[in-house]
Image 1 (cartoon, rainbow, N blue to C red):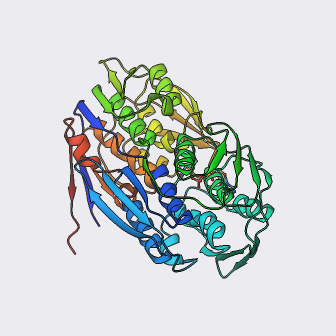
Image 2: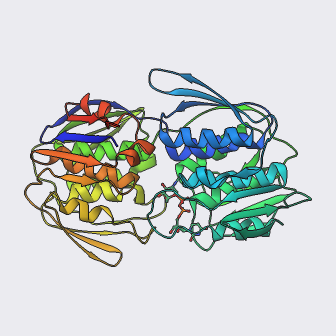
Image 3: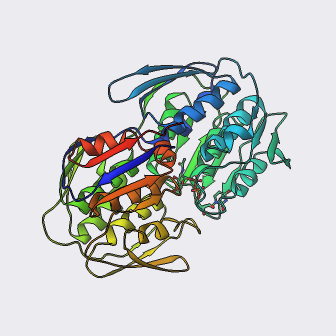
Length: 425
Ligand code: UD1
């Protein structure tokens, strides 16, 4: 397996182009199953998860063509005929978002058999909300041998669905299902993450009727059919937030090209509170820190527009060297502190108390061999390694490759000493 090596202590200075958002690109790809016409997605990130989902869509019947650009790809998916309505375990167990084909398949073909999902091991991650929502829309659902068997022989029917908690995946799934259902669906307490907005806008470009985009109540009037469209994937607020934290960690100055400040304002305001300089510019965000030490700052993860859980690990890495004690509370996933024991290898002082981590800032981190446990946690280890004295070796980087495009190249271009060593077979 490849490893990433970092010799820490360099200040980052330069410009980083932010890629298209993984968490928008994946559901956008599944939306291609809703129409027999081509869906073209521009600004597609080059990630392992995109390739994995592409393999699943191919099995289901979407032909894919990829036009590789210098910074981003253009992907066209054409599901003229659905070849299969079964999403097999071998693929769905690799990434959770592939479970989301359930909504479009059921809406278009009135049946689907989808393996229960996998993805990052950051908690129990059940799918009860997806199932209850689809049942309300008239689907019959059975769980057999680890597969969700869903069928709606007469087609899905519009319904009012109030979710007890905000779920990104359930909102994507039910919103897509509702586009082709008979009548009006109202999704109450829906997620309103920027990636949901991006997907909703794409669905509208495909002919869907959706009101309330960007709010927590979505009203979707089903239509007979959707058509093809071309859509640009929104820029990745989690990637941008990760590099913003890296800039604050190492000092120096980074301009995040293509970053949309409003999509991660909660993270930017916490960085400001910790002592970083942050300016949102037209089409970019600039993050800098002069020599002064960062101040400990508390965060609580929340659904959008709150501080995103997907930046919690990276922010914790930053707080390990801040002055004072910071309390980091994780409210979205119950088991998302696996990075704590790895950060301890750098000499970080962190204790866990239920859903809270108490981080006591130390003067310096020391490089260490560490193990990535999940996608965002891997980024936290890179951030710690960038500031640590000496060499850090990050193992299991396949987690990183799932969601961060060319991370070594982007950081090296800003002066970081970071390189990948290929596994010798
Ligand atoms: C998505 C993101 C992930 C992010 C998360 C929260 C993608 C590909 N992944 O994941 O990066 O960390 O949103 O912003 O976009 N839940 C239930 N029952 C359900 C569904 C969810 O109890 O049926 C719970 C989950 O266990 C979790 C909470 O709801 O505690 C939020 O999860 P959800 O928003 O669904 O996360 P994902 O869509 O899996």
